[in-house]
Image (cartoon, rainbow, N blue to C red):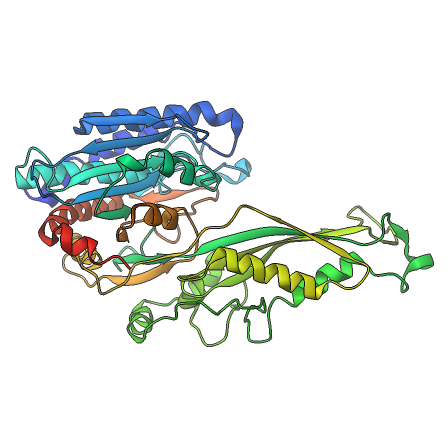
Length: 469
């Protein structure tokens, strides 16, 4: 039986498993749902056992919410070891009134399955299990051609606050030759692609304090500094007229796109009108000299996520407010160091704040680094070949993920190459009401997984490990 025949014959089993798992509201951000996060972990652990994994554990021995670990050694003594990363927790469903169906009652309409977690990330994890079964059936093997390890965390949708602690606590179990991340997507159903980088991030709240109490603007206005004015000037100074971030040293370590990468990015179908429609925006913006795709994944950014200060109620209250704030996040690209960016931002704020106003910066942790997949490595070649095989030989285009996650921490912990195998689509509405997944994309993901284990086995351990950047 071929890989495609096996996947086609077992599509209903994948849908049945999804129907069960998606009903568990494992929302890691909400403490009253932490029991459901545990149920979600236990459900997936049982699914791994049913697939044939001889070692399956739920890791709850630290401050993290339950994570799932599984291992299936290959019978081949020199087999490549692959570590698969994903997450089983899901986003909150607010605002619930915008959902057309119950977010935890999976609904199928043709090729579309709607439920929270359908695309991010439960559907993508389950295509891995179907793909593994197809790999075994097509090769006639009793064990995989590679040794498989899974680390599936339960806090990704809460920012992975304890993931690095988990990696330290269980480092002895994580040795591998390559990491496969399954928490991303493709450009379009008929345009196979793979993410070749995810941005890092640092984020902060900047608090400005002026007078020690709110002042009457008629009595004191024009004579003392206003922190609301100061915060407006500060955020306005973040970018120049070309859209470049003005934080000192911000671009010093940016790894620029190669000519090959820019040429490949230019081949990605561009639908700016469709992009604006999804964004519900009326104009494009960003750093001059770069395409929208390059801006979204390959360039660093600074964004004002919130700003406020002073009176917010109805009508007028003519005051000079005592305090104002801005919430700001910085997306980072390869080779940028979050610690260096933090120092630059602190210098920038100090230079912008006028006399008579004090600034305090609350950082949301030390930040995370970006990660990058070089295009000239055996790991990337094997992944591209596997995806191409699932899409009938079509060329596979590289793209970049604009978001951030714990992948860089994982890669740094294990010190091996990392690649991304994901089949979500831009219109999956992840993190939003009415999340969906195209079932046909999950089946393609299963096929690609089945091909990938054989491809990695052909490449071998030495070639894979030698390709780490």
